[in-house]
Amino acid sequence: MNNARIVIIDDEPQIRRLLEITLENSGYKVILAENGKQGILLAANHTPDLILLDLGLPDMNGHEVLKELRLWYNKPIFILSALDQEADIVKALDNGANDYLTKPFRTAELQARIRSALRSQQTNNGTTVYTSGDLEVDLTAHTVKKAGEGIKLTATEFSLLVLLLKNEGRVLTHQYILKEIWGVGAQTETQYLRVFIGTLRKKIETNPNQPEHILTESGVGYRFV
Image 1 (tube, rainbow, N blue to C red):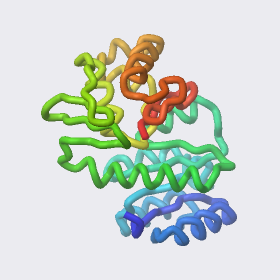
Image 2 (cartoon, helix red, strand yellow):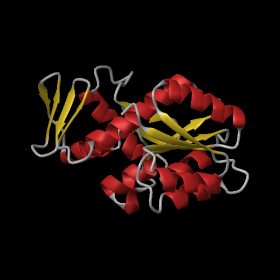
Image 3 (cartoon, helix red, strand yellow):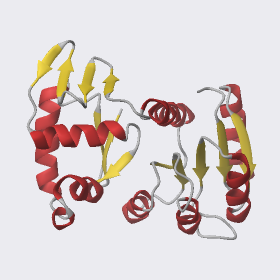
Image 4 (cartoon, rainbow, N blue to C red):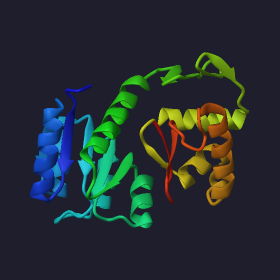
């Protein structure tokens, strides 16, 4: 999906120009907005495949822009912000952001995450078999294979893996995962989640100490790639 449309909402001219050059050179169509209201309008008029949103906008709080977009926009939204406090990151992810990169960011990493998010958008529509590298997950048969060999997962481990897979490239907070898998009452049991993630990594990762699929976003949650 290298001809995807991307709306950039950022009040810094240098950042807008950097992103415009970088993304257009990769084949994306870029639409620029310098404030929140303009960004919402452009997103509504151009139906982009992905939005890059800064939190420090001159006319609106970026969190409010995110909430307003999420009333109708269901495609990936990435936060690009100088705010690097855990509370800001978690708040943005809980409000519906797919990913969060702090400024200054590496353009190569940003592009890799964009590709992952767009690929996930394409493959998740009606898909029952997911593949990622040598990993294959069949939702209908409830089977998992690595390099063609079957892997035995418990029902909870399978549900956790499917949740991560369906949100490939997206950072899921501890609280979100706990709520989705174990219910609202488990949202504070982060250590419980770490144990399950550790067990799942031992089963699906080639080297659990250097995971290639389930990545830790320190203090925030996990991301599947």
